[in-house]
Image 1 (tube, helix red, strand yellow):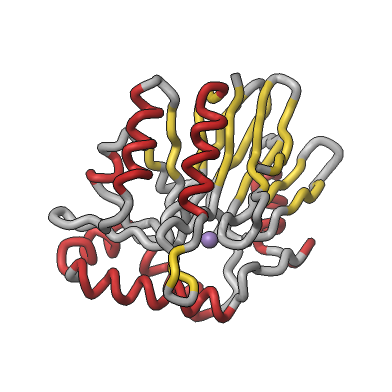
Image 2 (cartoon, protein in one colour):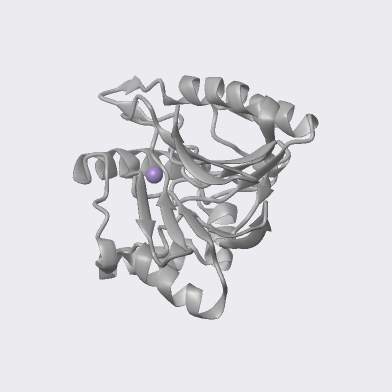
Length: 244
Ligand SMILES: [Mn+2]
């Protein structure tokens, strides 16, 4: 049995008006790893844009949600870390059995001390981004939006924002080594807690970055353009980034 880590599937993304095949490949991957999985960590941006209100949820994700329900029914724990594209979670998503972590998770798995988070809150590139983050990542602001911002308007905004992001950053954020926000965060975190591995998504740029002799920072792939996305697998022999 093993623990699996995957991020940035961006299911539902339209590129040039056409759906990508990332969701279909991700469903096939879930089938592949399911039989061997103790738990699967969904490390953010699984959906290209998820906005759920008490009365409405995005359409078109039935296959994915059914796959999640089927896995949790078999006793596989699914841990969902909201990314900047799918932080607007609610009861509908939770009812597929997902365990939603609105903060980074520090835990021990197979004897390894692991820190898991999507990473957008650590990897902030501008004052504007920080401002938007501080609003959107606040649980109260999110809750208020979900009560008062109409579903259709927010979905329209979210989908066009996501497309603009794709155009602006092409497909990847560069990994800035010691200047990288994820690295700075991890170095600070290590002062307070012993960590063997950090697992992030967000950058769409698979990375293995040693922080010390015993600590490594990993960034997972996205599934938009990479035909063989890198995902994480942890068992008693250790952690590895593997290609699907
Ligand atoms: Mn992403």
